[in-house]
Image 1 (spheres, rainbow, N blue to C red):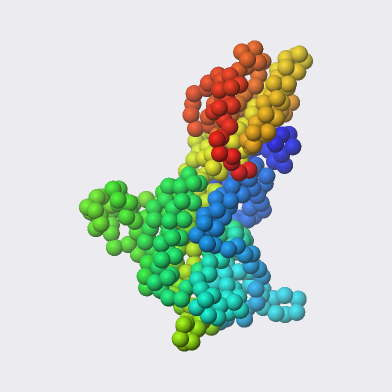
Image 2 (cartoon, rainbow, N blue to C red; image 1 turned 45 degrees about the vertical axis):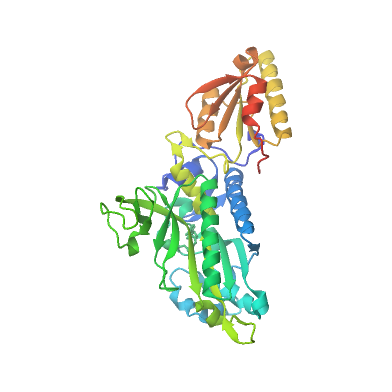
Length: 426
Ligand code: ATP
Ligand code: MG
């Protein structure tokens, strides 16, 4: 994409009202626009990152048998009364009356919805197990919406719900989902601690949270330096400095961001909605359920929190909005300018033809200094400069965002380094 055609632009200074690093950088870079506290618009660059994250999540959810749906956010009060959560969640749920005076609310989660729908399709042991998921907008009137895209009041959630004939089958899938979750975070370049946490009102067992160590975190996680056994401080039986009960290593504490979690719901929702099945003998039994959440927007914010320096973002390749930032420095003279345009255009077309996602900075009025500052702020993994100097040297000036060194590369070497062997998304 040509940078002059972007719907966006950079800001030198972070907006005054933002405290979170992710929000400052994402807004300065033109990845997002803030509508109000906890409500963000995703602009072209930000949406590309979000879509890359979503594509990774989709791949991993499909790989464990997930089938995608897209459920409504606007829901009637009656649905939520079946579990008494219209009252329980009243503080955080947007609830209002429509024009006919009917009570409706914007869903904060979808256990009620999937349970109601499941009664239409699950009748027999032959209908189990089932795994459905969505990547959909949730609304929560979060009291502390100061963490940028990490805590939105309107935000995306990937939520998967599983339906099983018994607890053993739920356990089996839960372990599979755990593996898929680890792969998702690894692929997004986020190191997570798989943390034991309270099962909440759902179960007396633990749930598991995927916690990324970051000063921006609102959670506190205790974990073993050696084997990485971890517990959320809210339920912890271990303390800092102690020896790990699993391996004898040392327990440390750190602020963390919860990027995902998985829960065994048991039969709480299936009993409330009457989701049951007939087993082989015809006896009716309640369905066991599990739920599995990830915040794709929060994940983008977490990537930003853990991958940046004082100049800007440093996107891991798998989620970067573009792989290459092609920066053309035209100079003043017309003949030089023509040469640079020709060479940069040729490289741009070639990379596109090879399936490489390129942001081409061909802006005419922007100084070299501004272009470099923007490249650092946007954090695209490979910066390739075409200038009078590089044209004269029959080479390109290449710099990786994560490395200080600048290297001159010939066309052939550049192609080898930059064109990935496996075709990448986006
Ligand atoms: P938290 O404890 O941070 O409030 P939660 O435990 O309520 O989150 P869940 O309801 O389990 O979260 O939601 C599943 C996932 O959705 C979370 O792991 C997180 O990644 C994401 N998420 C939850 N709340 C938000 C939010 N306000 N903004 C962005 N993402 C969120
Ligand atoms: Mg939580």
